[in-house]
Length: 275
Image (cartoon, rainbow, N blue to C red; front, side, top):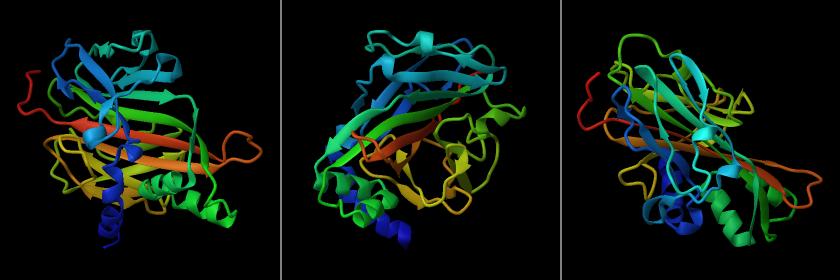
């Protein structure tokens, strides 16, 4: 009931370009053959507001892949002009994480717009702090940054464990799948854990979007005391988890809150590629 209510309240908000805050990594193909280069697009928004992100490469502080043989720094593969998607090669069969972080930039919204955005993103702690300090009618000033992960499968999934997929990679705000969505299993649910600064984050609103039709989330849950949220398992289509978290700043002349956006994407091919 609570999830249904949240979805109903937010549905009219998330479809507006004002609330097009989602940012994610969109591989050209989530599954590819060994030796095949995979283009990775950086997208922002949802529904009619979806577009390629105009983020400058200079803002990206981390871009790496993590696979069966370890981590690889991919910053050097970004287009310096920011106009071309990086095309990554993966040396071995297996499951890979592609991870990205950015630095902070400032945002300043009128009070009504900021309060609506905070409500749509489930930032109840931000709204509570604004109310407690008598700032609900003041502009919302924040510093915000992005975190994103995509799960890419090279060749067919085998029986070898892929423990790096279900481990944290150290992002400031991170969605960690507790099972590899590409592993051979019949579990009816997919559990994710949200970590903030390395610790489980309770009370965060996690949304699941169908990337084929992402005008509004298909499922939303708040994390429990262990930072976990349980969703129905998906084995077809392309999917995006996202979460936002903010904390108050003190003695900062330019912002009242530090906000982090984080996403996790994965997907399945219409037909499985050869090994």
